[in-house]
Length: 173
Image (cartoon, rainbow, N blue to C red):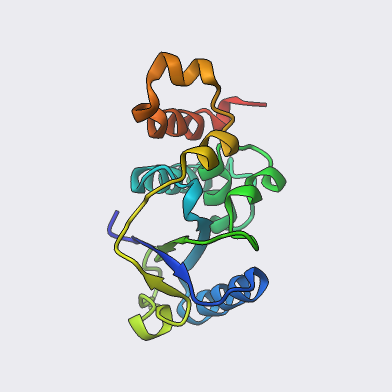
């Protein structure tokens, strides 16, 4: 996806409300959609890319639940249909590492949106080069992955189980 960038690292603003406010401010200045996640609950980069693809499809087919693309991405990434439950994969007071999905809108009319520059991003996140490096217990709890599923699929397949939940969001009513 050439309209998406993913960053992983430590949040430089420790208070989660202030962090989210700073993300919203940067989003307003750049015109990009910026969604923050608790990186411990992100199974892989593919997890977020797949959620972004699903959110774009939902908007283009007019079956989105959220009015905001970032919230729709959060909803898919969480594997939840309800926005309130989807928030559990977002940043909170206990978040140690964040994943930022920066999504540039399609070019429309005379407006050309710019990516946030590195100085703006460096006020939000200290990129640590670890990429998506989830915490097993956080994924199991967030996505309700049972012991039976782990025995059947093996722990190395947990990212695949998460992708399955993202894929099934639209089928759960």
